Image (cartoon, rainbow, N blue to C red; front, side, top):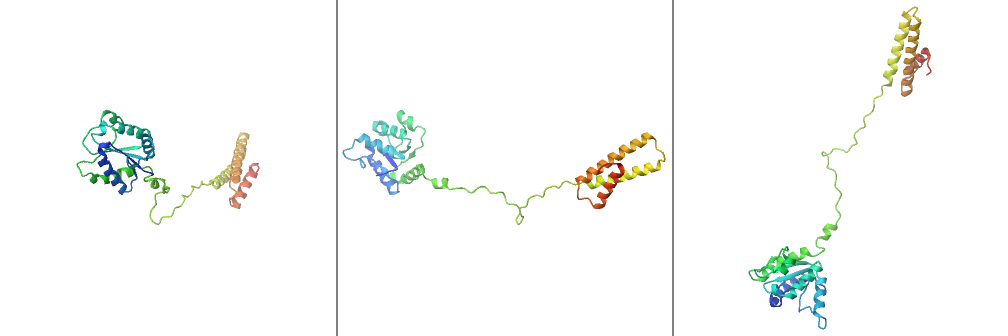
Length: 242
């Protein structure tokens, strides 16, 4: 018979062990206990070893008799090697001997005194259920929804922020260039006979302004026709190429 719990006890404590076994099985916990579940004709030691290795939890009925039982110590050793959970169920106020303390000194136990013993079976069954592998596995395996972003104000639509648009200053450059060229031509008209150095300087300035106007007009193809014509005329007057 498949079982969840192996009940370890000294032979003197058989009545208490039987009461625990009946109480657990009445609550749906499957148990293996000697001598009830032994099979005739099969070595006793082999049956104990197989039953402990097949169990997921060992319940130790602990009393002063356990401290003197070499068989119980062997069972504790097998359970520790099989990595089974050991739950000491103490039916008397007794301390562990040094050998049992090696295995169980840091293990939490349940006290089952004063009597009656039945008053503590519910707590024992609940402890066993929490220690059975697979308990709560459905909750752990169930997928969790991904985290959602924090909601904004009620009714507010989710919109992408508008991208900043780089201002286009090309029309201003063209207009400024035209004004500068007109002023330069007017200045040349006021000077009846400029010196050769002034004429050269005037030509250099006019050429530079014309180049700037031409470059600005190429960068912005959306200029009004009148502005483009003025830029082209100013470039021709200065001797540049549109």
